[in-house]
Length: 343
Figure 1 (cartoon, rainbow, N blue to C red):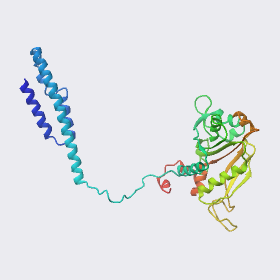
Figure 2 (cartoon, one colour):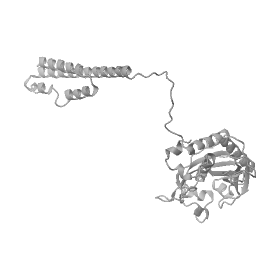
Figure 3 (cartoon, helix red, strand yellow):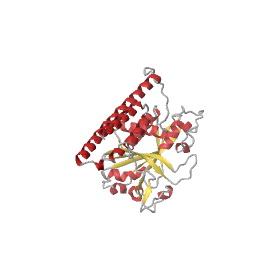
Figure 4 (cartoon, rainbow, N blue to C red):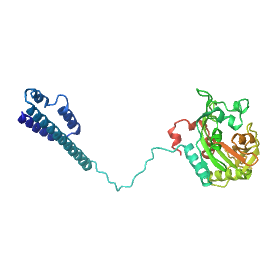
């Protein structure tokens, strides 16, 4: 019986070294060590042997099995080395040839401009907080002085979620309460994020867009700080000096509020210019800014006699449209490769 075991081992080893393909070797290994392996017939005769012989046979078979496992692994390693050698001979590639870079992807224009905006604010030592896309009715409205009866809620047609008082953020202002209650003044930060409103979609309106909000709370700040920050950010973004002007603006949830325009960066404005961006005015409407209501400061456990709070916000989509002369806001949500290849 031992002779038969040795004969089987030798036969399997010979077959192993004849195999030249990895898949074929794996299949043969499964066949040898499967339920129908060739040593099974030998094991049928073990029941007729005495205990000493049984132990000897079992030990021999286990030793042979371990030895064959090593032979299979050894042959597999050899096959893989031969495969690599063949590929190196037949598929030679000169690594010294300069790489011809082929761009297969593009950064989305919204992401590109957002990175530029964040970089500008970081140079002014602002912190960056990402807005939450899902928030509560309290954080989105009540905490920023927009109660249930406020007309501003009609202006922000909201997506309500299943569950009690959960909404998709209509504005990045929903993060203000979270930040102000987790950090003590002075505070300088921006809050970029995606917001949602139930808008009818056309070339100028979307139900999903991006907003960036600026938030400063300190004891000695003024509108001059606000104006300088906006001017610095826009000058960085357009790579040229811009001029800022502020006009009184009505926003039903703040007092006072201003609308901010900046000088057109696409034309040297004069009476004869025909710039399609500024429409012959020399100014581009851009964002809104405001001074926080004292009630909101009290909601944040801050003394309105001691601290002043300024903020501004703008639609990132609109800024990108201005920067790249994009005439349809729907391009940002539409996965058009030809559109993205421009950036």
